[in-house]
Image (cartoon, rainbow, N blue to C red; front, side):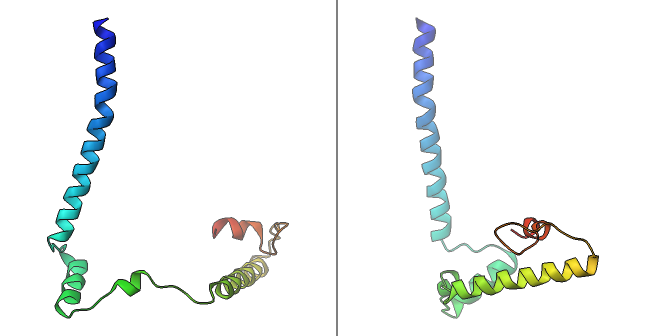
Length: 111
């Protein structure tokens, strides 16, 4: 009876300890970021320069590419041409996937 009670207490306590540890970890991370600490080295140097010169670099992180579908189509075409060129250079006949004209071996390497 006592053993079962100890197991129930243990099962109920461990998830709460994990939750508390996660919340504490997030609080530490947020407080370090909010304190203005910058890491040493080139990354810290870039961050300090951006702050000193009042440069907002967030657009670089959240940029969107217009006409992405066209670029994806062009990349697929470039991959197909490169695969065919590699096939001619090597003289090997690679298997072609049924849904695409890109050789399967090349496709597996670059997906």
